[in-house]
Amino acid sequence: MKEKTDILLFHGALGSQQQFNILKKLLQPHFKVHSFNFSGHGNSSTDREFSMELFQNDVLSYMEENSLTSANIFGYSMGGYVALKLAINYPEKVEKLMTLGTKIRWDVETAEKEVKLLRPEEMLEKIPQFVEMLKKEHGTENWKTLVLKTAQMMHGLGNGNAIALESLKIVEAKVLVALGSKDKMVSKNESQELVAKLNQGKFLEIEGFKHPIVQIDQEQLSEIIISYFLKK
Image 1 (cartoon, rainbow, N blue to C red):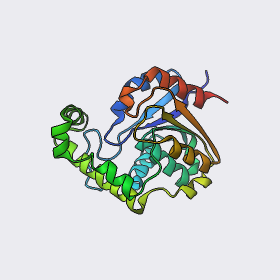
Image 2: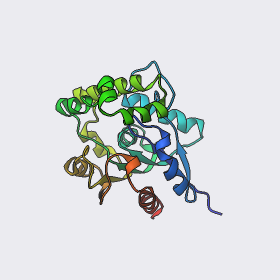
Image 3: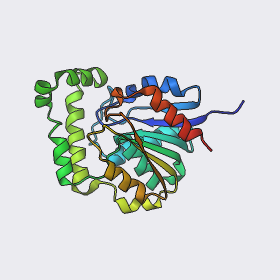
């Protein structure tokens, strides 16, 4: 019996590996599925500030602890950004890569727009149901810290800490850049701009998909992932 291919699932900002509970079950007949929480997410705390370097190191630690020399990677939103950073700095770790809803274009204006949505007191007032979800996923003591650290990280991306698009030219792995047709956070233009910088990049627009992963058809997503990573 052929051994299953390893696939790593990277969650998005303000998320955790819980985002993949349904997806993992759908993928497990086809892959050896791995997921974990980035530092400070999912009821874990960290004294360190959030950064793509911190999350990249989380990946390296997980891979070392689980004896993974390399793996296929599916990265949702921020998770896709971490995966691209890994592909630039540690190309030997990445076999094939798929991103979904990953924002690649960051500047001061973009960061300010996103950070405006990350004010805990306003969130409690305007989106209490989402706050309750954050409390359940990350803990009543941790959710505000998570939000504030995420906002600070986004400020950093907008002020010079983002991936230089030119550096993507050195990525040799095959990369599928997927975007939902109803995604309001990431534009089709920036996704296609990302593809244009990659040596082996392809763009896929998925009809009807929104940005939040909990609002998309998990079965359809699993079929796309299976087809892409297992196709020769």
